[in-house]
Length: 225
Image 1: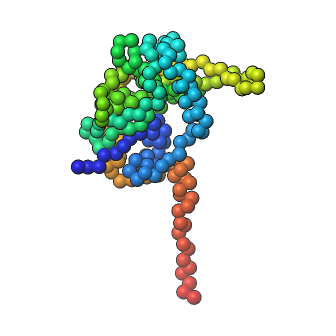
Image 2: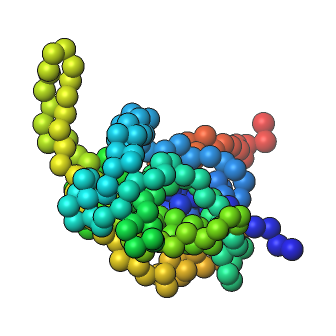
Image 3: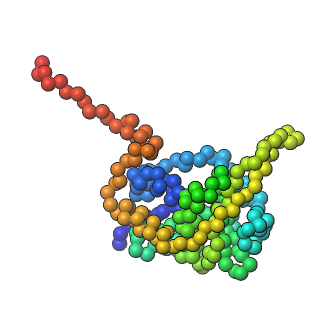
């Protein structure tokens, strides 16, 4: 049986897009790649998720479907993706059971409300969550009927009674289902992982850093004395 490779949905948006060389190194050899985001973003995201647990999605944004937010930072692991040597494993932000019995998978992004960037960057990540939840390695499948991202970007910050308080207006970006595009991406990743190590990327800071430690060619003097 050929080796199965674990794919993290959170790597699709940046690592895979930015550098196939570093992505290959991480998935196949466990050479980890540090996130480009400060840890504080994760802290803010977790505080936000905790504050809305048990609420209706429509309290977050009126354009969201009605349903109670039930799971925070859930773990998921999928079956093998058909036609590939890969499976999905990772954590999602929140899972919401909608009024019709299906579920919505929503990711919160601490970022500027740039619709084109958000839809392009995070569509594959949300589709990965959908596949994993609908095709779990263990447990019952969960039908995902709604996907999307909510961007949080501070509108105002001020000092109130010795505490810094910031306000932000959530912006909702629904992501339309397109599993064909998702499967094409996974097949491309599987093909890359089955081949030789891709070349380094000239625009990848990590590749540039690694190159700076490569031994330089030794200059040999032709004079024999």
